[in-house]
Each structure stands twice: as structure tokens, then as C-alpha cells.
Length: 332
Image (tube, rainbow, N blue to C red; front, side, top):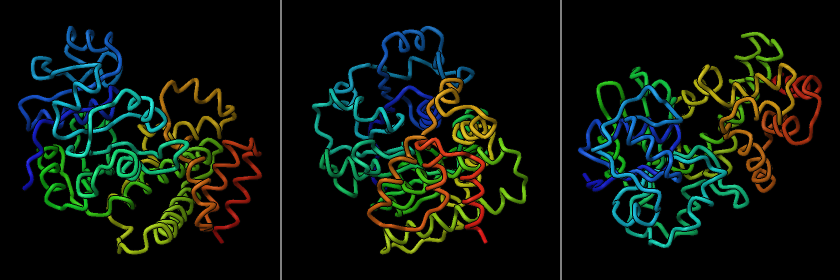
């Protein structure tokens, strides 16, 4: 297997924290880039992330922290990116170190705003990272359940299967099983779309639609996702019942840990989009992903009534009752 070398976690949120914990199960030490020095100092003092997954304990002596992105990237062989997609470009603004010889692993479940590119494509096009040096981490997996050490599953995808296997072995432990794939682009688009569909599921939950309707909604969301992937990546044969597609869609649509479902639930209960975002005080990637996917689909023109419904509610202030009813009619 290809060696992963020195691993750096890039980001300070819950997903970055969960991945850092997993990596430290198998690695003696890691690098960790966090933007804020005050968070780093609190982490070193208290032995846990001061803002996210605060119950997860770390040995700070095994972590080399830095708020200098170039220092971290220069020392690392493998970069594990786990920042919210809307902030990715701002995090990379100060980057001057070349990424051409780095193995870039993205755990970002969103699209780069203004570029309308999934993260792997962004690194290939903007930073000249070769295809075989980019990997993605897919679900079904919530950071909170990793932190609670509940048995969870991840999928690591890379065109270079050996690199995927090598990184999967770094994440694997008695409470985490890692599956390998080569469908980088498909897994990334699914990771974006399942967040959109989770918002739709949350809206319907908030409006007190029942389990029967939710089953129809998620079934149709899987079909919609499959049709889009066939249009954007027809050369790959994939089984949409695999856990990284169907499983990730299910857990994000139904779980109490799903930020996107929770955002949708508040909107379904009558909150404005803005007030729901403020009250959550956390990033729901699906809000940004909805706009990006809606714009991207103008190129492919795939019929996507659920995506269109969520876009109309979030960005056009459409009536949730009329818009959901119109969407429901497409399930017939």
C-alpha cells in the first residue's frame, strides 16, 4: 500500500475533531491546522476542542498545532480537509506552498461557492493536484457518533485504489470500518445532494408530514440523485443501494445529529430561513449546496423537483405549503 506519511488535519470543527480522533488511533502523532490561536491555546490547556465535541479527550503532546497553513502543509504528506465548503477559499488564501506532491483527502461535503465545483475538482483545476492524489471521505457517518464510539462506517474513494486502501487503514479501528471506492466525483455530488434532501425531509417533518410521506420523499430523492449522477458522470457504473449513496442519504435525512434536517425542521415549523440559521449557530452545508446544485443543474437540465422545491423555499421565499404540495405531486 502507498504510505500516507505525516498526516495533517485541516479545520477546527466537529468533523475535523472526529477525524483527528480516528487518525490518532493508528498514528503516533498528527499535525493540526486551526485558524484561531485562542482555540489552539485552549485546546492545549484543556486537552479537548474548546468549541466542538468537547467531551472527546486528546493528548496534546501527540498533536503539533499551528495557525500557519503554510507551515502545516509544508510538513505534511497527507492533508485531511474538514472545513465548511463556504470557507474553503478563505482558508486557502494564504497558501503559497505547492500541493502537487501532497495527498489531498477531502471530507468536505459541499461545493466551492462561486466556482460551482466539487472540492476534488477544485484542487485539480486550481492547485494542479493529480487525479490519483485526491481522495474523498463519504458516509454514512456523523461526527457525533464517531465521538460516542458507536460502530460507524466510512467510504474512502480515490482513483488510486492502493492510496484509498492505505488511508482507509489509518481510519479503521474496532468502532470504525472503512470501505474503499473509486467513484470520487459521484460520492462528492451525493454528499452535496443528500444535504439538500435532508433539508426537504426536515421541512416536511416540521410540517408534520408522516412516515409514509417521508419514505416516498427519500425514495424519490435517491432516484433524483441517481439521474443526476448518470448525467454528470455516465462513465461510472455504481450501485445506488451502496451505503455511501443510500446509507448517507438515509442517515442525513433522519438523524437527530443532521444539521440540515434540523434546519429544515425549523423552517417547516414556521421559522424564516435566516432566523433558523441564526438559532442553529452551526453551518448547514445544504443551504449553500442547494444554490450551487441548482445553478449547476442549469447545464445538465436533469428533472430535479426536490432540489427545485428546496431552492424555491430557501432562496425565493416561496410558500412552503404550496411548494411542498407541488413537489409531492411529482411522486405520482
